[in-house]
Image (cartoon, rainbow, N blue to C red; front, top):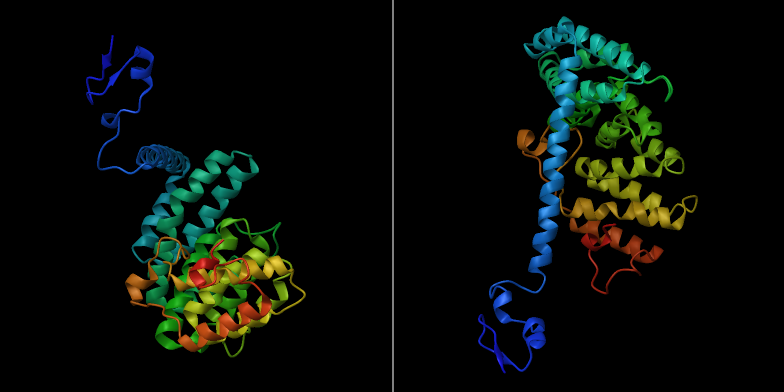
Amino acid sequence: MPHECDACGETFNTLSRLRLHDCPADEPADRGPLSSFDAFLDSISDALDADMQRRNSERRKRGLEAASDTLKTNLEGAAQGDVDAAFRLIGQYERELREYHDREDYDTYRGLFWAFYEPAAAALDEIATREGWDFLVDLIDAYPRESTADEPFTSPVIENAVGRHVIRTRLEDGVAAVPIEALAYLGSFWESMGETSGEESFTYGWGIGHPEHSVADHVQEVVTEELFWVRGVLPHTFYADQHAAADLLDALLTDERIDYEDRCLLASILATVDRESSLQIPRYWDCREELDDRFEFDEAVRSRLRETIEAEGFHRRLGEDWTFSDMEV
């Protein structure tokens, strides 16, 4: 007895064949073969995003509950432009972070750290915009980075404000107007890679070409010690001055002190620069929105770097018509 599929009308001699057939009605006509799997991946991604948002919200709540009234009051004062309150804010923030860290209560430590990170950095930046570099240099002097073992817990917040002002100063007044103290401070965090403070110091690259502090020399000195910090700094050098940055990258890509694979990794930053990725550092600040700054490769720079990449053989693993975007790792 034949068996007919109610959905598509096809008939089969056995019930087993009916059950096993690929019924066209089971697949939506307007979706490709991978659409179901894509939807599955999207659902996983959405679930992970929701879980991350939930955990971030819980972490922030924990931090706010743990924070003292003194810390909250000083943040309010700093946000209203009170310079003295800003120094009290950083001092109290440092004490409370250290307290929870020393207790090994790392969940509360992280909650407190992230709950106050953005508003504290924004408050410092607002005051620095009004008061100028003297305010930030005083903060740097008060909370210097002496060593990895003795690094202020509030360093990332201070670096964030310093980094914003380095970029702003360079674009508005030129690199020579950036204080040496600011660049030396940011450049001191290369040993902190893997920590938030190491990432926030990537804005050091905006000091390239400074007449009294050589960013290029410092980068070349530490590249064999901390490749990933250098890799984070390099895109910022291009956004600041692509000609000086090309000189630096060319020197790094031909430096035989650096392992070949490591040089390939350094070359891959060109993919990031080429697509003009939005800056993730400094956190919580959109440089391009405030300063309307956009990057576009000079064709002479692009051509020169292509020649270096081909001369060193970094292009061999790419396609024949490779572009900088193909170099992403």
